[in-house]
Amino acid sequence: MNTKRTECNLCGSNNYEAVYKRKVGKCVGKRKSKKEYTIAEAEIEKPDKIFKCNNCGLVFAEQTENLKYYADRYAEMVDEEYVKEEKGRRLASIKILKRIRKYKRYGRLLDIGCATGFLLDEARRRKWEVSGIEISKWAAVYAKQKLNLDVINGSSEKTSFPDGFFDVIVMIDVLEHLTDPKYTLLEIRRILKNDGVLYISTPNISSAVSRILGAKWWGINKFHLFYFSKRTLEKMLDACGFKVKKYNPHIRIFSVNYWVKRIKSYNYVVYKVLDFFSRVGVFGRASLKINFHDQIEALSIKVRKLDYLVNLAVAKKKKAVKEDMKVFVVLPAYNAEKTLERTVKDIPKDVVDQIILVDDKSRDRTVEVAKGLGVKIFQHKKNMGYGANQKTCYSKALEEGADIVVMVHPDYQYDPTIIPKLIKPIQMGEADAVFGSRMMKGGALEGGMPLWKHNVNILLTAFENVILGTYLTEYHSGFRAYSANLLKTINFELNSNKFVFDTEMIVQSLMHHFKIEEIPIQTRYFDEASKIKFLPSILYGVGIIWAMIKYILHTKGIYKFRQFE
Image: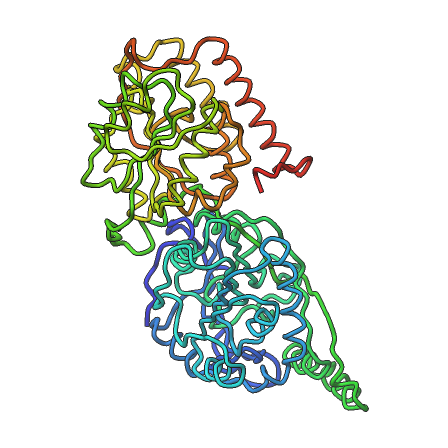
């Protein structure tokens, strides 16, 4: 038996107290409680003790058995009563899919704890690409043989899906059974796409029904190891990098006969009366929808907050660097004749597959110099602006098959020799974009950045961090690496052709929940380097303010901007 005092799964505290102790020999209802687990069974044995964390409020049962005990009981489960309620369970599944459709309309859907696969089957009919995980051998075989579904028999911890594989992950009446829900949610976050949706349904320990019925409440049984309220579920999701977008009422749809059998555990006299009427004609087979408000349904999305937890707590082992990824460097050039050759010379050719230069109708010999450097050249017929130049850079790089695109200003202010450090987080699967920050470790002032420009940079970055809820040290670097997946997802073609393009790229990346990392860099300021004059700097600042206003209007639903969709 495992009765040792353990840490709270949510906050790590060992400061908790017992809020429930099962009386020895105490039974529920007229019959002895059952020790075996089935989904449809109401009279399951109660836990010995239930604790509440004094720090975060999470309620959890004492795990008196070895972990294998719970896994074995789930694996051995056979529940024919579950299948008899197929009609109602399918109707409930359709309602869930409609709720999910408001946030995600198609793609790959994974149902963890899919049972016999009724939800998966309904999702497949609606053109979802579906997969399931089910620990019960009986239920998994039913789903595979009866419904021809792709279902893995086992636990979610033993699967090895790639990062960002699923658009939607569903967990209905699963979270409360897990021995380590935090670990599982972190793993779910890893395999969920950055714009993916997580749907969770779990009993609500703080509901009125739970408080009235106490230990008799159906939600308390030996196989429920954790008991969530809205507050603790939201805390758990937040700690694992999720944000709840919507809570929904939980509607149960079962036959009258099913409801009557459930009442037997609470009041035998009422059960006998209702059982008599349920046998009249077809009344007992009629479907009945009821909401007891004792179940939490939460639709959540991934957020960047606390992303580091995924890397620290999920696999607890390093990912292999994907050195076979094609790395392209793009140079948005305008009047870069004097500095272009030095910039290209410092680009490490052993890690870069191709260099693309886009000339924005320079008035000097930029193109002539580029032709002698072995780079691929694209020319604008007229000067279109810094943002327009980047649009061409990224479009051409994607057309050529780039996996990672590094943008370097060809004015030699940035040091291209550190490109391997810049792209490594993307190769490791730990970031979707990496920015070289001049503000980290004093790199800007040491490199000669004018003090006024340094201070304005800090103020604008702080303003953007407040609006966007981020913690970047700089928004205005001209040395960046993007994954091809990010560039293919966001609508960068709809961004400004001017300097505010860089900020709009960040807003779009955050809107799609891509992860941004930073590395410290030093820069060089000298007479030949490109400079933004005072008036364009003012216009740039105004453009940033307008970008933040658009973000607020879009996220608040006041006005939708296509570039952020």
